[in-house]
Length: 346
Length: 292
Image 1 (cartoon, rainbow over the protein chains, first blue to last red):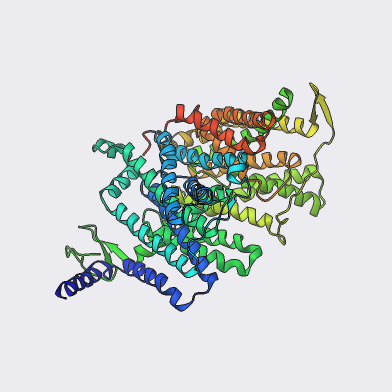
Image 2 (cartoon, chains in turn purple, green):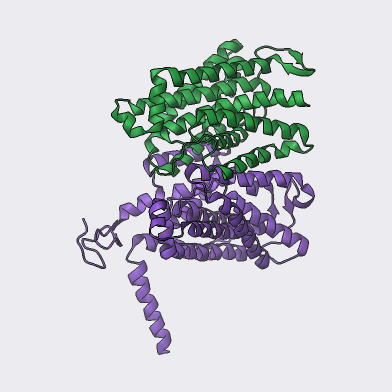
């Protein structure tokens, strides 16, 4: 009994000391709680469907952030990972009959391989060249998909795939739980030593190399990790939509993930997740005016970025929190002194 | 077979060259990857339709008017939305994508634009002749001739005039150009105008040869990106050579391979990949290695 209460106390202290002290973390906690409790309030299939899509795309956008936001290797062809995983999962499920809990990890593994395949040649490229070279891969694969319609289904894609689960609410919980868990894992990765090295590579690769970091290895790691998480998103998508078509490889998907991530704020992980949720919901909301939906969407994105060029969450975070000048820890904006080192905040 | 490859390769290559030179100019001067570049090309094609059909102006006049109008739109969008976020590399990407989407959706809107369907623009001159036994439309000859003249004109502008020197020096080193008394902001604006005008001319030339649809900017965008990477970002010479290499590669795949229409983009991109894997800075690229 005393052990349980000790753990509870420790959990409470952790919650109070690490989460509730920062408004941004409190918001994240509230957001996750809302997501998990929502089906208790409404189990309307339409709302759940939108939120499942938003979760999948949020995971996808966060994986872009890991590669492009943190490591600075801008990828214009992120749909490659999504599409490779989607087709792999679909074909494994359809032809061999593997269940979704096996096909999704295998699809993600295929995406990791894709990350290696494009990562190795792209390591020599930098900046805009890298961005434009990655653009090529999903489009080349689209060409291949169209040429072998016997296997890939050509333009129509592969359909008739197993559902994630028979009930919509379970599907919702799977998607949200996977998104929250992997989002947390990604945030932990970026918060670790590896994450600091990713930052260093983006800021100044030459200096990182001079400090004895094998930047090649870390860039390849970023490609593979990003491929893994994007692949999980692709697998979830395919088992939810029950169709894997060429739209999973399209240019527009690669662009969309960039829009979600930059709109939310890059190099934060939670930024792209927020961006994907806000923009997917906005897009659904705009169906009230179907004719001008995309136009309004583009204009809203443009205006928001003109006023907050760093992205939405970064802008909000800088309003409600400030960085301690001495120990670089974040503090709520209302504090006069740092919560850890008690230095004066101005 | 060979004649068809040559004729279509030259025309496609020429159009890509016009687009790629404009794209690479603004990249060189302002370090902007303008993903809305081919959206301006599409806008020019559609504006011809508006001027000629809806307003009933003569075709030649509407071509000229649409090029001017698109250039004005381009300069305004540079001033209003692209320039304010110029410092944030990644934000530029989505600002320009959003700009392209605004143009696309305005065109695809049934009440303001033309809806999602396909449209056609009449040729400036109709009829055809036979060269080496291949049917060549007069419009195609005109297109190629205009492409050559415009490319030569751009080259002369960049190499022989004071403005050209200003543009090239801004591209080479923005700070030093500024110190030498060049107004880099204005040079950026002028370069954007030239860049968009080139895209608009390409659009006006291509309009009679293609069906117009609100998604027609996608494929050229991919090709232009491939061309400039192949040739080396910021290099005019490289863009010209790259455009013709990829134009011919694309045409050859379409003519020679049975399922070529699906593969044409894929093969052109594979060519680009092979080149940049051997030469990471493209054929004539300036190495940005030490730029921080």
